[in-house]
Image 1: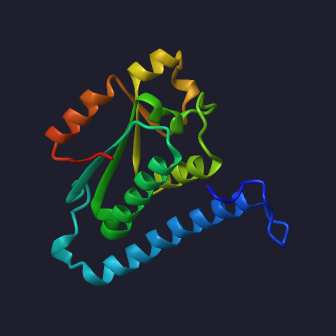
Image 2: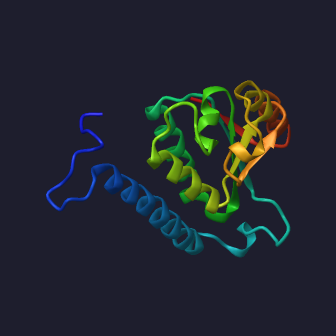
Length: 172
């Protein structure tokens, strides 16, 4: 990153806070615009009946701690969410070093911006799965991860089962 997080602008606002607020604004505005845009393009035949699942399902593998990787994956998730609105079910399966985005106190560096984006995406219906095997290796229990994460036994099995249920698989 060419700018340091502790650099300040002329207005005195911390650059990292500015990025965080901008990121939240982009995600929130994009979802609203997507929902409005999809409403104009969607016909009654395209909408699922109440209780039916979404027409589109995708699972993302999230297994790296690299900040660029995290940003790219989360941007892609946001793009899919903007495109399909309420007609998509998205799961992010976190294991290995990637599980730290779900940690209340990550043992590896996770920026506040990434943590905020993860929390925001969860509020838009994106599911986050935490690998139980990885949690065991970190000596983490359920109270060590964010409350919206679902603990699954094994990340690789999660990917397999979700694909068998019709989820498209995305990996970086």
